[in-house]
Length: 298
Length: 165
Image (tube, rainbow over all chains, first blue to last red; front, side, top):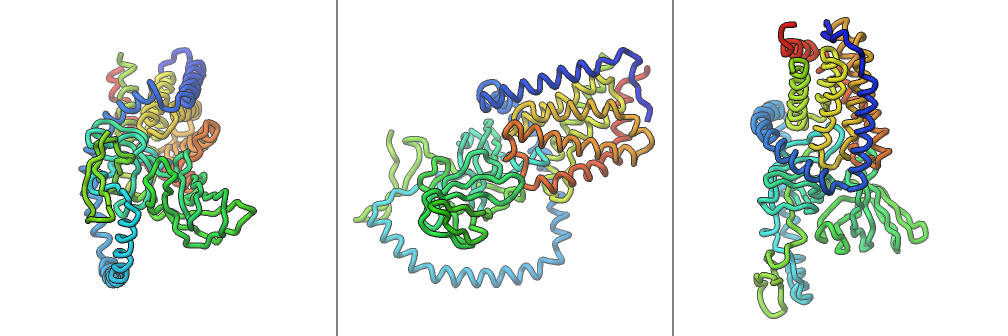
């Protein structure tokens, strides 16, 4: 392969040093301003330009790739179908068993006069249309501020398991980062104890730490978002404890495996939470009547 | 202006590479090329060194702004280093398409290591993915294959875009 370089004076080293210094300056400034100001505006503009291209490419590629997946998956469909039938039977039995628990919960909610978010009006379903980095797991979705998606809104998968949060929005698209790659820890509740869940470098597992622990944890213990969390509504399932964890004084450390795999998501749900004052419908249970729908004011 | 045209086309190819890897290759867990690095490496075979360096820098900016969670300048730094190394070592790639593939794979591995080291230095460790060990091998190997396949077409395209000398 012949090169076409001109026999001119080689200025590559000074150019290289200049660009490296410029890149370092950009990194330093961006870290200091934490994605505010010009950096944030550039990113938002770039998302607005790149996302439609990715949307277009996805609309061409996805149907072809889906067809390929279907053809390659035909051999396993029968056994999967059988397994799913068994799973449906098991879930139906479980559902029948939980009817009594649901009735009891309704009574308890009435007793406590609870105010719950109306899930139907506070969710935006979105397609995952792009994942620009082969290393990172942040992804672009096809819903943006025009549909009510804002910075910091929680993202869950179609089963309601916690995925991450929105970190960038444009009118028609947004970027989400999974909690496995979030620099901020998540406040969670496990076995009645409040702890923090933080990402672990290079791992799909996350680190759980409970500082005022009173009870040890067992493998399989459910981890849900806490009411103390300012990022997620309470009670969303996050994952489960991997191994038994013993108390070390009042400290408890454990590994947690997420219920969802952020790398494999095709569709997500953005929860428009916390609600804008006066705009979100809530369902209020009272002690004297059926649940009624009201609108918060101011 | 004529000397800038191949650089602009290479930047356009990097953009196309970014869109393809964000859409098509997100579906495959086992095939994860970094097409932007690939374009930056292969363009070094054709472009004037200063333009190649600017291409590396701008391609990095492109990836940085498209990944909202990444610190601005991280990929710019990484791809500029890759572009410089590509300029200094391009003779290694001139003995055939397999040699290009290996050369691209080695430069990709260097880019991953630089990204890792600088990323950790700037507090980006949590944003470098959950399968970094696997990706350390997967991305260079994927780029080996795609480098061997795409190096000649990309080189010819960039040479042709320069027009008659």
